[in-house]
Image (cartoon, rainbow, N blue to C red):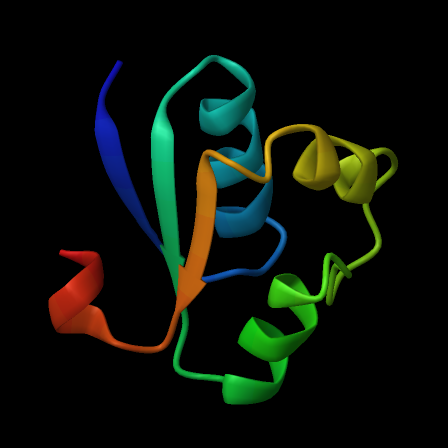
Length: 73
């Protein structure tokens, strides 16, 4: 298991982060958009991607979301 930081919570970053978490890694997703981070913390995806919210819920113990780059990296 690795600790991974993913920059961005769009179609590439969020999907990658969720997939890493699904494989058992601890993932911190970082983004400058506070609105996106708040949605993610509520379990809601800011993008449309089939099954991403279900995988976020399934892996919530391995996923964290922040706007603080220093904490993420």
